Length: 251
Image (cartoon, rainbow, N blue to C red):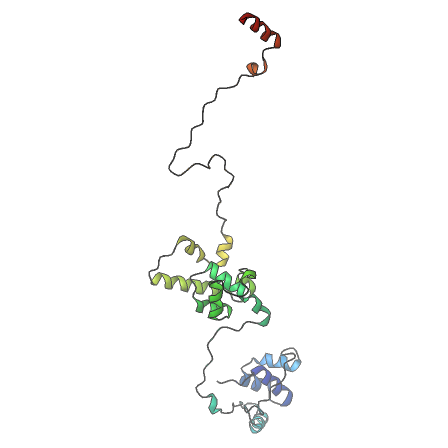
């Protein structure tokens, strides 16, 4: 069943200006009956301005009067030839204004940690355009110096299940094409929850002494044998009188 434009605003107008039952308004606007009841109580759609369906040629006054006289009757949307054959427009998802400034950070995170995702998949996840994704991939974005990668799930721009499904689909497509993946790419194919639970990779300390000149395949350099130092010979040095006696003997 086709729904009217701005369904919730239309429901607000019908609640305020007609005696239609909540069930009739809910069926016409595609809402739940309790939601329409909440609109009447002022708990739902607070601040939403009513949208007149008569002035916008979605209902006629006669149709409203007919349903007001018969609570079991259903409102019928006015036929509009211009809407014949129209389908829902396909495109990137809507991103609230409060989160649009975080969109480049989410794109940078997806490009960095999931390079197997296509531009179309990223566009559907965070609601962006392909030129924006391409500019961040090529680091030509006007604000690239200030963009830090942030998980789009943490930003609330997509769900974890949606991200995992997109990553799994990209991995399946890559395997179907016969493209070999590196170990780094396989590690990136895991979900965000799994990656957060993984242990950090061990790193080799950079301050190891004695390995500066050590190369792979060579044996460890042997330590030179040093003559042990005798403490007595080191501290029992000859006195000046002994040196004079040695000089007289030589003379």
